[in-house]
Each structure stands twice: as C-alpha cells, then as structure tokens.
Length: 94
Image (cartoon, rainbow, N blue to C red; front, side):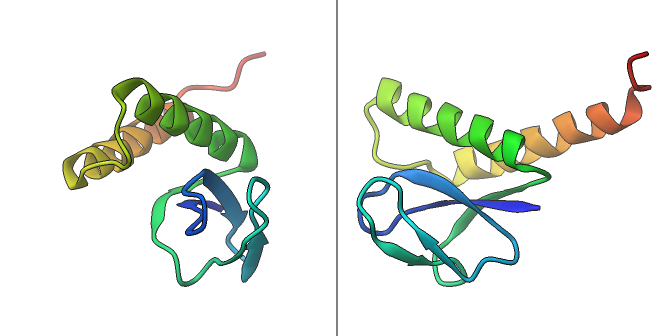
C-alpha cells in the first residue's frame, strides 16, 4: 500500500510506501515526515500512486486551484474504492 500525499515545502503531490517514515521530495528536496502530513488517498501499488499523483497535478493545474475541497477529496476516495472493487471483481485476462 502507498500513501498519496503532498510535500509541505512545495505542495507537489508525491507518494510513499506505507512503511516509510521519511520521504525526500523530488522537487524541492524537503524531508517529509510521512506520518505528519495529510494523506489524500491510500492506494494498492506504486503504479496506482503514480497515476493518481499525475491526475491530481493535472486537475489542479487545469482548474487553477491550490488544493482539493473536502467534497473533492471524499469523491476521490469513493471513486478509487469503486474502481478497485471493479478491478478485483473482473476475472483476470488470459
């Protein structure tokens, strides 16, 4: 499992493994205390984390906003949960 979070120094989205205590921001070099910053979403693997990070950055850039609203955050979590359930329900491709 990975946590999607934001760097408190530069506000870029990033992700950290659930066992990591510290994360070095790849943009500004700040050392992020993973336990102390808000987690936007918990995802199953790094591929999902990278995709969510990219989509969140794009969404905020296009909308010209600084952060997600509480409703958007709840929607994000709900949509990811629904998508994950669908992925687990589908039989694997041959």
